[in-house]
Image (cartoon, rainbow, N blue to C red):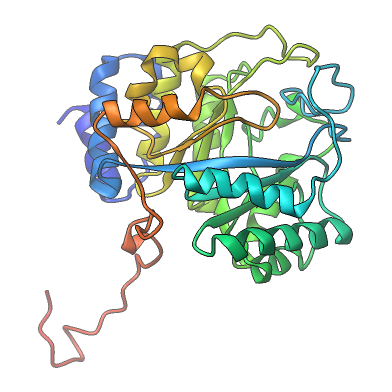
Length: 351
């Protein structure tokens, strides 16, 4: 059995690859199309040919006190981005509604800052209510930074479905990209969101100089958090940030990273996120054979490709848009442990 065949078999059994297997995916020992084809077998098993559409509503932009080197909103950034305080809940609901009309299933409400205060939570509660009043079936994901006690529960009670907080890079090198908070702070927030009843969403950004080993470290750390969705971002090197001009990624590198994440998260929503247009370029269609979810429209501070182009790309590749009524995750995703009621001690025969 080849390494790729082993990876497929393990993934279908929801088994984590070994470190050596994971590193091989990134190393280039196997032909790229063979890697993509192997990842597609896993994607197809758990998600068929469906593509879930997501969109971002940026509630508050710029002037963040954190110093994440990849971010155009960071402390000290001179990137020429839009800067504004909280938009009105009605405006946010209108933006969300247009996205839902275009086929979006999840709306991600994002605000810059270290983390929300009580007043911020109240604003977001109102915004969630305005969106759900018009579109009760839409999934609302919230991304507000580091959470404090009780905040996840309040967002859940307001109607939020998920909370997004990326780990971004490996623990070993986290201090190189941010000094105002720690890797442990981010892990803590993901766990708070999960305990608070929100679906955990946590992923990464690649293209910041990380090694293969660091990519695998991050994938394994995320696996330990058991997220329901994993956004895979590729660095957008904004002018005015410490990482401006950093163009380390190739389309092949991006696809190998995506494939690794599919093998590590076989039955999880792997989302093709920021930077896909500029790094994958004409190979975005191959990425759809690995990821089962994408962002439609613009990102936080940069423009995405036109939504109509994305919808055409999906259709041309033979995929379909996931409907509101279709569950994204496999039924067994959160029910992997089945109590035994057969065999010894029962009247039912063992199976």
